[in-house]
Length: 274
Picture 1 (tube, helix red, strand yellow):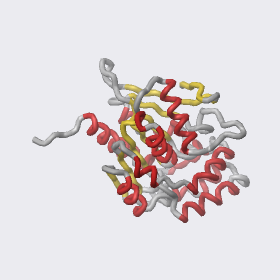
Picture 2: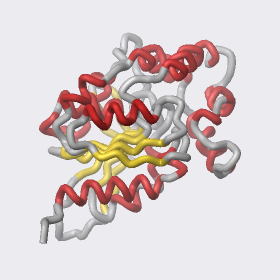
Picture 3: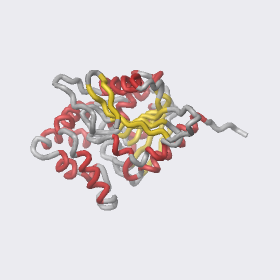
Picture 4: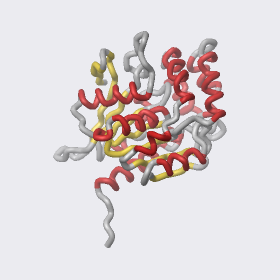
């Protein structure tokens, strides 16, 4: 369990590195989505840490990172800046960024604000903007969180994240409990700016290799929007999971991690024509 002071706040992070000890591995940063923590990456780490130094961090107010004080400016830019300050603290020059949902949006912002600090970008269940149905849903959630616990709120609409008829019920219950540990005020604050996010212009400026992992049954990201993002990010690669719901990073975690590993390894060891 590790933590460091970033802008006057303790920020929690984990580092896993099972690469050959005589080599100096590149670094991966995994950044979770709304209401989650570093713990959700449990099945990605074994896949990636054999080749990379894997850094996971808890977003501000999530997991074991300090909550914000009054007046904190919630924005993608603020969260991207805190990620950069963490890399500075750990003397990590560049990372392969892997982000799911909100963590992917922060990665897009990071790639624009600090292009010299990022080697590649993997975006899982990441919208460039939220669909109209998703915006309507998200705008209702802050008032709902005034009337029930975070875990109750999350469980009530688990069908937006998982295939509740097919996915492992114990996994879904564990996940709801993890989200339930997040302070309602933090989730409400993020939900007040998130529905209006539109990063299409930022996508068009991305200059690093980008992998898009798209679940076909996500409310937040339509197939059309995934294609729009794919076209906006020059040279990006799109991998689709047609039957997966928004939390594909959980239900298909090992597959997603293998796709990221294959993608990042291809950048270090490009195939040449024979």
